[in-house]
Length: 72
Image (cartoon, rainbow, N blue to C red; front, side, top):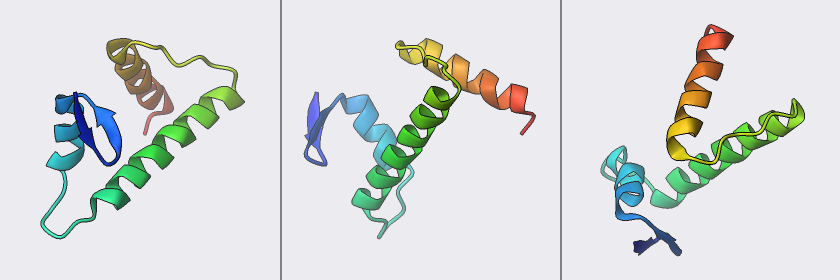
């Protein structure tokens, strides 16, 4: 675990958050955008009474299928 952004995160997750940052990008903005996206997904799932899987692997597969089914 590592403590970044005032939150304890697994090292690999912290690296994923930072890897897309360009020089001069704001970490706080990146974290805020990711949180807003996650909350929007959660709200959308709750709006249609769908439970998002708990495990990372199942969650990724579930979301991938949502986008495939949406034909985006």
